[in-house]
Length: 277
Image 1 (cartoon, one colour):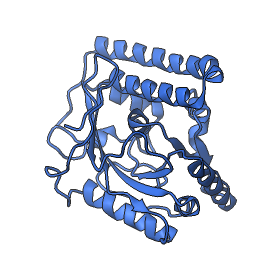
Image 2 (cartoon, rainbow, N blue to C red; image 1 turned 120 degrees about the horizontal axis):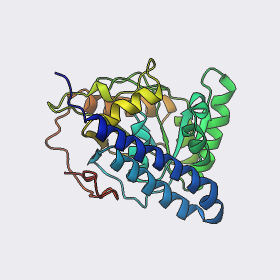
Image 3 (tube, rainbow, N blue to C red; image 1 turned 90 degrees about the vertical axis):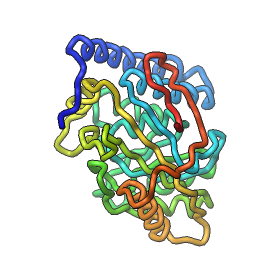
């Protein structure tokens, strides 16, 4: 069944708002960031991400053991489906991401990501893992929250790829908490909406235009119970996170009984609410 799309006029209006919002992001990073403290920068990033979801009419639904926004020193480990994942996580709370080096080369988006504190990794180079693990560990020790996508690439959202365990060592070194996060894009019938995925053959522009053409997109972000890194190996942590997220994503865990514990409104008034309903 084909998904309904907006009229060309409405799509053009969204594209214009999207371009303007990207320009706003550049100006905020270039002009405002140098003159505000880290707490203010974090608040700007959260608000900007919420507004971007609003422009795209993307509703973010938070489920499960939703952590408090005041949380510190947590490594969030999530499955990866789309570039929207990054907006969704940052719309909930400010984190520092670990991303593959190719993201740094994307026009505008790569520059914004770098300025927002993203750490980039080339997985093909063995020494990179050690460098990035130390960077993440330092960040966690300072109380920052860090998010990574242990699959190393995106999937279509119907199942998970195997988790790489290397960067889980950072949580062990920093005596931090690992919090598994399941991401899902449900279609109208409740099955995975594979059209929301950003896969290898896609260009970023093509994927963005596909999202822009939709009347709305739903993003479910489910928080599993947190894992204590102390006393575990990195492989054990990675496997535990993978298993619990896979059970939820692949549907073996019922969703009707998942508790909802937080309610946040996206700042853009044209957008559906970001909610736990």
